[in-house]
Amino acid sequence: MNPHHKYRLCLVTDRDLAKGRSLIDVVSAAVQGGVTMVQLREKYATTREFLEEARALKALLAPLNIPLIINDRVDIALAVDADGVHVGQKDMPLAQVRALLPAGRIIGLSITNSEQIQRPDAALADYLGLGPLYLQSTKQDAATPLGVEGFRALRAQTQKPVMAIGGLKPDNCAEVVAAGATGLAVVSALVGAADPAAAARGFVKLFD
Image (cartoon, rainbow, N blue to C red):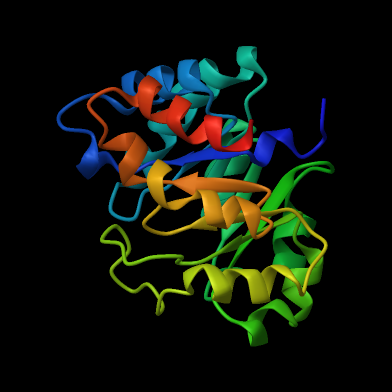
């Protein structure tokens, strides 16, 4: 299997979009449709709630060999033996994250512009999340959308696996994949989908 296959389709959680369903149910359905990685992102949950969700997702995903990535919280990742951590530009420096995590864990970094991709943190990451690609509503402090050409320009500056993120839907991602995306990180179009499995299959088809 391609070593970068795990980056192909990452579901990024947002409990507010789950339409009353549990995250476990949404993630389980999306995995059936082809999700290859899950990032647990909780901006407002208490530490205990975050920890309980992480444990439940780890129990679901580990037998399926699907990586669980924790957004921002290295302590939660350590507590549940998650497969990695994804951090942003204002979070813990990657050298410190790397020092705290066990060997072999995955570390991702959000990148929104060319200056960030030249910083030492980017060189230490296992993969880069480039975006936002399009206008989106799940991240209130999101940067200006890159568009496909902006994504292409950033992609040309790194050989690392890159995941596009931000306003992604199956009908606006073909050009992004053609521009060099290793994978897609999707929030609302998966978590908020009436049928997460079918939605995931729509994204997976873009790589066939």
